[in-house]
Image (cartoon, rainbow, N blue to C red; front, side, top):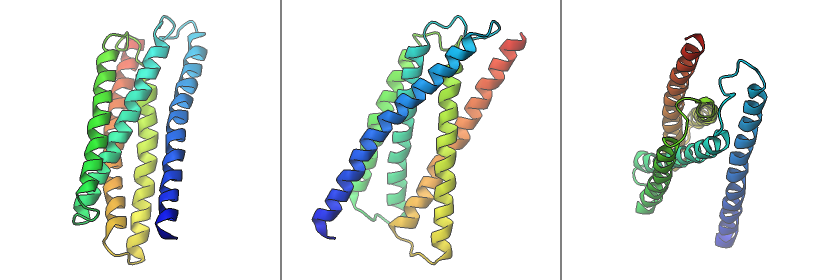
Amino acid sequence: MGLFGELAGLMTGAAVGMIMIPVTVLQFIAFAYFIIVVDRRNDASKSRGDTQVGIKLALHAIGTLGVIIASAGITVILAWALSGGEGGKDMVKSGLAMVLGSAGFVWLTRMALQQTNNEAFAQSERFSLGALVIGSGMVSMFTLIALLFMLFFEAKWKQGPAQLLAAAAVYGTLFWFSLKSMLARQAGAAASYQG
């Protein structure tokens, strides 16, 4: 294929990713907003008086995207360590750039959410946590299956299996903590309905 073919493939993959990520975020906002609008028609809806749904959904979507990108950066660093430094120091630098850049946005969105009515009306946060649970659960399950497939067929311990193990570990951990947070938030919402 040659260097030109590999670069063209990387650029195509990056372009698709740059298009798909914002589209997915916009789909999340539109779907969640639609569900909340339908829910608000119910007289007993807890979100009936929420006047900040749009801004909270946008902030949660950006925060969720930041968590996903930070997880990808951690995966790159962990894969580098598990593969014995395969890929050189540039792997660590790229992973750190992803973690630090996205962590800044996560922090900013958390600060901005404190200025909203997010504590009183947490439905948008539960949607965001649900998206993290679904996405990280799928990624961790598929990477674990791919890792086992490679190990069963005697793949050498190089960058491929190390990347899969790193991704399964990072996204499995993200799945666990997102699920715990969502369940805790859901329990709080159920208690406020009964109280």
